[in-house]
Length: 136
Image (cartoon, rainbow, N blue to C red):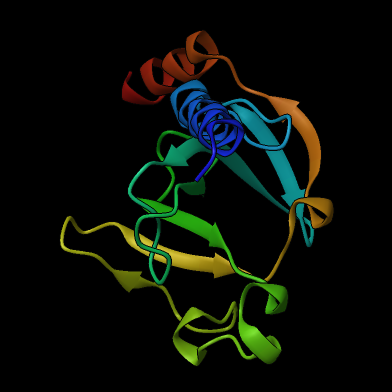
């Protein structure tokens, strides 16, 4: 491998590391509220270890838009993610949520970034106020 190839590989690695560290994805930042099929999901950030079926590949995670919502996360899965458009049935949007070892429910959205529409943003302060309001 030549010096130019090594430098390019190093720069790509650094750019990828920044992407994971920043917790941003496709212009979204944690707290952005996304709408998909008339339901709203909160962009929580990047799962650095990769989600189900995609270990080792950091990917975006979505959750409920209310701190009292279910302990559930959603990952994006689309036909284009898998060869020949065959998503395993267990990762289908229509499959019921599954619990992981921590008790978190995991579901999938058959979507790409283009299918999601940003409709709002919830700051950490707003999130804390919703949490406090519910506990009183």
